[in-house]
Length: 452
Ligand code: UD1
Ligand code: CA
Image (cartoon, rainbow, N blue to C red; front, side, top):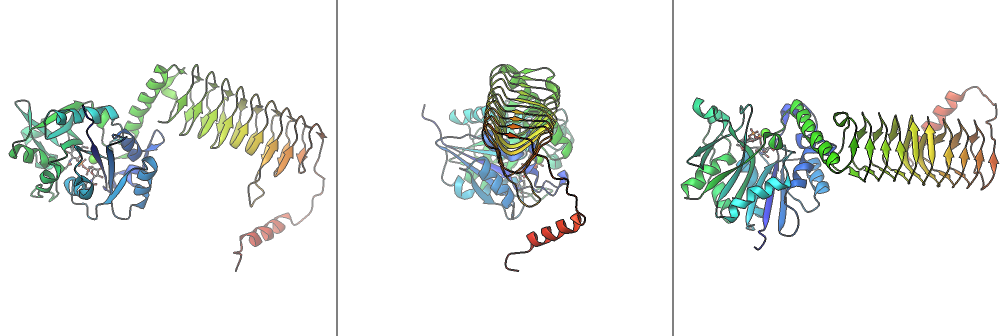
């Protein structure tokens, strides 16, 4: 069987007014990724699979997110919002290239899976002109109803146009369709707007296919997979469904989740073997956790890589750019950001490690702070291997602490400490008046434009 080519057109030009947000609907996140990114990730990929997104006018942000999620995406603009069929035709140029299969999906159904796209395409191989994804809705209000006669899909009736009898039908249009690519344009161009909303309904394609003597079929899926998101409440429901999926996938792959319902995962979390996650942990995007690592309760982790057998928390906050080597121990009330910690480093209590590198085997005492910000710019702290930093020390960056160096408790380190040296530095007890005025003066000077 030769592989069929495809074009997937994702419609994302809607305004999403019911979200009551200044952010476009499709940019809202589920499990840390935008609704749009989820749909694009599920769309067919690889050789012979083209992808297009239809965005509203002036929606550079949506186009940018689409390109970030799938660099191969083509963006088209729908200038006026005249309905779903009109939106599809914004991508006419790509459709006219004649893919074997034309797939249409909506940007607001983030739970759709790659497997469902594949299932929907199967009838086209057997000669169907159109396959529509359907589901049994617990409450069908608002959805287009699929009208089936003798096993054949004969029409889709939108809520506004449906009779009382048709409204009782619970088989609904999920919004995902697969057309025979050779005939798609001819069919969609025939769609008119003679309905109560004067919109071009893509769903009218079914009646047109039937009139042309073609076959339209329904492929069913679960409601959970095709929940359309129009409100914040529906966004929260989708999050629940997605989290349940991610937790199950983590458990199935061998991760120990002691209380799965209390752990929040991101769609892209990568787990090694024998990872244990205690209750009440939040994991954002870009996190990888290697074999044998334990994440204790109430930890919050975003864009961080955690080495083998590391122990994190309880109550740890790992921020973007954190990279922890094998066996690292991060204890309670420790925050890290843009920090690489070598194998076996211990930061066990009450510390902030930011813009820092710590060599293998170093021990960072309770209350150690890397003072990375002087009020104007960020600076780096470099700590060598096997160093010891005593409790309650301030490392005023930029600063280097050498290999095996020893910093006494309560030090304020403002100069580099060489390898094997001992630093017992204390700040001078010079307290001058007018500090606030001096700070304001320096700050004002720093803010002045260079040429002004
Ligand atoms: C649509 C379907 C309905 C189906 C439901 C599933 C039509 C006419 N109706 O209704 O049968 O049960 O989805 O959730 O297709 N969009 C544009 N440009 C437009 C109009 C819409 O890009 O001019 C996009 C929206 O951004 C959205 C999608 O198309 O991603 C669907 O539009 P929406 O208004 O949400 O359609 P529904 O009324 O939900
Ligand atoms: Ca919708």
